[in-house]
Length: 606
Image (cartoon, rainbow, N blue to C red; front, side, top):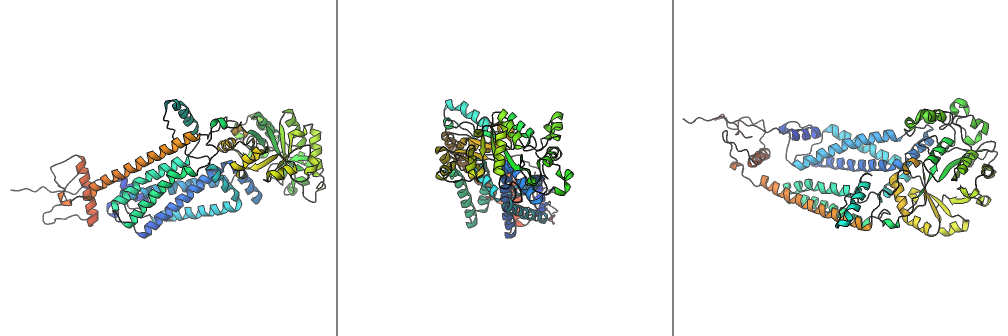
C-alpha cells in the first residue's frame, strides 16, 4: 500500500521585500506584489519623484554654499519686513525634512526597480511629493526675486568642489606627500565630481538589472544608451573644470589680509568698540565701518537706515523709532544702548561663549563715533576702510557731510595714508586718502581717476579679472568672505585682501584647504575613471550571469519533495524560480488546493 504524505505549500518570509513594498505603496501582502511592468501612470510619478529629488538636491546645495551670506539674507529680510529675525532657520529645517523624505522615497523606488517589483506609489506619498515640489519651486522663485545675485555662489563653489577625493600615487617618493594632502582635504566637505561619479557608477546596478531582465527591447536599449552617455559625460567633465585651486604650490601668493567688516560682528555688536577690539584680537589688518552723520554734524557708525535693530530706541524714543538715524543729534544717539539687542537676540549663537565680564560690558555699549574708531585703529597701527552713507536731502549737513567726515579723520590723529575712501562722489576733496572704487571699470578708467584699489563682491571677482587687475598694479579687496573654502579660492587667485564678518574663522586657515597640482589632478581623474569603468563592467557581467540563472529554466524540472532536503545554493535558486513562475502564471497564496482530488498542496520546500 502506497501511503502518500501530504505536502504543504510554505512560502519563505521576505520581510525586507514586504517592508519596501509596504512603505512605498502600502502593499504589505504577498499577493499584492507583482513583477509586471509598471503602468505609464506610475512611471510618470517616478519621473516626478526624480525631478523633485533633483530640484531639492539643487536647493539644499545652494543653501549649503550660501552659508557665507546668511547675514546678508537676514538683513535683506529686515529691510523688507522691518523685523530682525533669522530667516534661514525655517528654510533649513523644511529643506532638511523635505530632502530626507524625498530621498527615502527615491531609495525605495530604486530598490523596487532593482528587485523587479512593480512601482505603485501610495497616494499619501504622491501628495507629499507634490507638496515638496511646489514648495521648492516657490522657494526658488522667491529667492530669485529677493536674492537673485546669490545664485552665483553655485558657480563659484564648483571651482572648489572638484575631483579631489582619492589620491593614488605611482611612485614611492610621492606617497607621503599625497597621503598628507588627503588628510587635509578629506576633512573639508563633499567633492562633487567624485561623489557624482560614484553615484552614477552605483546606478549601473539598477540599469543593468532593468535592461537585462527585460531583454533587448527598443525602450530598454534607449535607457542603456542614456546611462552610458551620462557616464561618458562624467568621465570627461574634468576637461571643462577650471579652478584656481589647480596650480603649482610654488606659485601660491601670500596669505590674503583679513579686514574686520564692522569689526567682528559675530562675536560682538557690529560697529561698536567692543566689536573692533574683538577683530583686532583676531589679527585683522584693517577695520571696516559704515559711517553716517548726525543732525549736528557728528560722524557715527551705523549700518541700518534706522536705529531700531541695533539700539533700544523703541524704549527711549518710541515715537521716532522709524526715523532716519541721521536725523538724531549726537546727544540723543549717544544715550541709546547698542549692546543689549545682541544679548537678547543672539543672532549668531555666540552669546553663550561670552564671559560674565564681557556680558556686562556688552550690555552697556553705546553707539560708536567715527573719531573713537579711528583712534583705536591708529593705536593698533592698523588701517581703516570707510563706507559713507549720505544723509537725506532735508538734513542740515546734506552738502557738507564729506567735509564733516574729513574733519573727524583729522581730529582722530590717524595718518591719512591709513584711511581708505570708498564713495565715488567728491573724490577731488580727498586726495590725501587712499582711493578705492566699488564699481568694476577698465584699468584705463581707474588710472584716469587716480584710483589704485578696487573693492568687489566675490561674485564679481572672476579669476581672470583678478589676474588682469593685479598685473596692472591694481589692488583688489573682495567681500564678504566668511567661509574657509571661499577664502581658499581667493587665496589661490592671488587676492591681496578680503573683508570678512568672521575673522575668527579665517584665522584658522593657515593654508588653502583646496590646492592640487595639475599632475595630481590628472592622476586622480584618470584613476577614478578607470575604477568606474571596471566596476560598471563587472556589474553588467554579474547581472547577466545572475539573470541567466533565473530566466533559462523549466518549472517542471524543480523537484518538490517532503523528505529530501538539499541545503545548497541550488535549492535557493529553485525557490526563486518557482516564485517567479507562480507570479508569471497568476498563482498566488489564495490557491489553497491545486490538486483537490488528492488533497495535496504544492510541495514543501525551504
